[in-house]
Length: 482
Image (cartoon, rainbow, N blue to C red):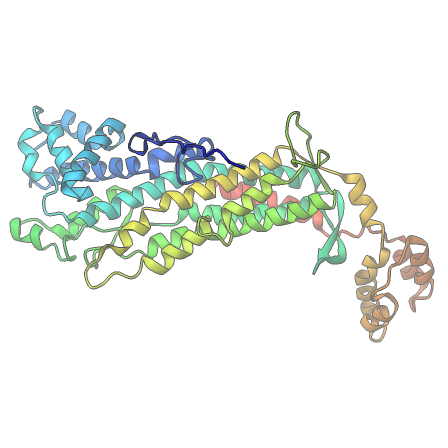
């Protein structure tokens, strides 16, 4: 039997457009709509914009120490705002030049020179990149990218998650819920207090990220200001460097090789790693609550939970969040943070280029992190608490009150109450009726026995409500101190 052979589809690879369907990275493809606001900050375009900003503001700083002529107010303004005004067309010009130079910073420098031709700044052409090495520009540019993407994009989304958690804390702080340790029934808590735990953890790390400093350097080719000092020994270049780096919002690092020490970036990213760890823990807990029917997800018309099981509403937002924040795959945000923490501190002698390709992946880290955060917000928007199921499971086994009883017996001087209670309750399941009978046999006086008899899973919640209120006050106070 003959079979017909299909002709392969001819692909014009040379003219293949970059779209969400052709992108190699899922961030630039499937998930582009969710992360595209990061593009002006941490894309190649964002890096070029930040480099222009450093170079242009450096010219302004040189004018302030009379290395270049005095600048008019209009010239200063044009230079100080140049970076933010770099268009995609400008960036494409840089990339065309780079194909010739095979050096990205030199390409940006040449593009900058072309921009001042025919303007009042043309006489300053030869002072563009005066005394600098590429890493003087790059280290500051990357830190600008990281800091601004964090402050403008990621921190507001994280604060929205904290707000959601605080809303759930307030709404459900009085709803008793079975607590579990080691996956087994433990003692009661409240739903709101358990959300308060995540609100407190996330807010603490978010505020830490908000305040975490970055350091930058402008010290020349091997860190000694060699060219600067040789050309203009009359300038205090150490003081100049400190002032310029601080003007960009960073602490100045004066003791360097050609590259800036990367530990501040590593610490900054590890703050993200801790944030992501908190949220993975949250994702996993919510996944369990959904599987126990303690949390239910809103049905939405047209959605499909399974290709074969039409009844399903899957917790896919929380699973997607977990997958983006940390997984065994190298594309996860936490895996990339660990990779940077291992690689960035190592550069042979005064400089090698092996760190360059690694640090370009800041956008991957922030992109997967942001996607994970947005997954959580999407999932939270459709969650509701199934209080009836929570109550049923809470009251199923009254043995969870044994902790309180053995503690009361301790205060009453009963000998070895832990093992007394354990011998009666360990591994057992006790309903309300059995509990009341069991209480009658306890070696305590009538008043204490009545107190134990009146105890119920729904009332044995300790100070959960007060702790929930305390958490909300603490978080609100931390926001006011911003």
